[in-house]
Length: 335
Image (tube, rainbow, N blue to C red; front, top):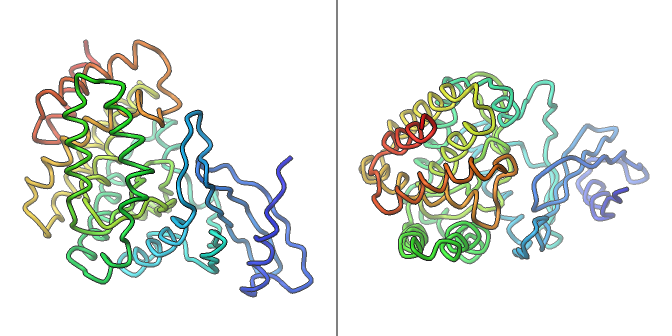
């Protein structure tokens, strides 16, 4: 039986989201590995409460600073300014306590993209909308010195993304370590715009055919937008092993998202951006079976080996384009 943190109720009362003597109903919500998340139902509305954890809920020891919570709030506020409705509205924030309250988006009107994909409902139109929204947020913050100064989260991004994904995978594959560590170094040193850091179908709500809502921005960082693009596309490749009947649909979503995103790249030459994303995608693909955060649905050795063969080949000979990465994966699936 989970017990809600008393700081949640204190935050609700301070922000006027519940009465001073009110005892709101608090229900734990399923979430990721990095936070405690609760639904608060008060006389003044329904709110989602989130508190960052210092140790992530994974098998490996994975510790990250709780101040990332403040950067998540800042990312959501920035995203909503650039693309209204692209993130839940923040209603209260306690940066010292590492918790905040935001609007609760009802699952009856906001379905999780991951569940849509799990059911084989792979809509390229929605995938393209994800690409356009993501590119608009990147474009709106590109070269912005104030945003860059607000998100100097290099150490957090290293601890929660580069080390557990690329560096840990380098230790598991010594003969590809040079390529993986080079990807980590290139990503860390590329400063272009505001990055979400966890653009995954589990963090995207479907509010309509052209209205993605992004959640869980606690990895927010001013850096390389190629990471966001590759991170999301990676999941569309992996889903081919989860719901095989929808493989063609997932690959169509991959193409639609990549095309929509790249069409909006204006802060640098699109081919340069695409080449970085394609190279990074190979490393992230391998990381989701052999890094610190493997996807929960790729469990069979045969499936893991498919990922390993494709990713290792791409790390040895980078594809250069996202379409070439998808074609290599399609060829492996057909073998």
